[in-house]
Length: 94
Image (tube, rainbow, N blue to C red; front, side, top):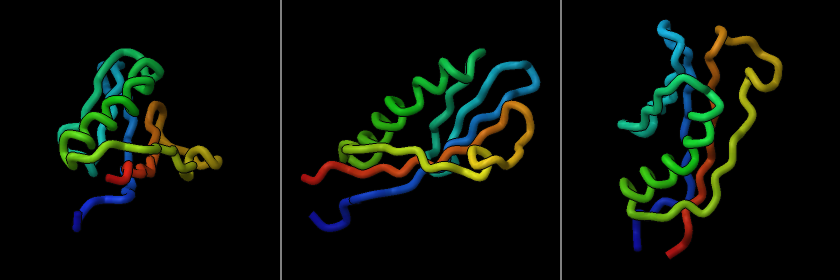
């Protein structure tokens, strides 16, 4: 089938809000927003939610998802509570 995705990259942003709660979103996937009191708990939900949203929006199942290191994880500095990830997604072949 022409036009099927084989791979894509998705930026995921983690921010600490003024009210102390954490917010996770992606400019690459409109509607992807997670909010809660614990960054770790929300982080555990990122992959399954991304997989389901991508399946719903593309009609394709995710085969693999890997997190690429960013400037912050390589020693860069970001504001407290802020983090950025890039996830590379490979889709299952039909």
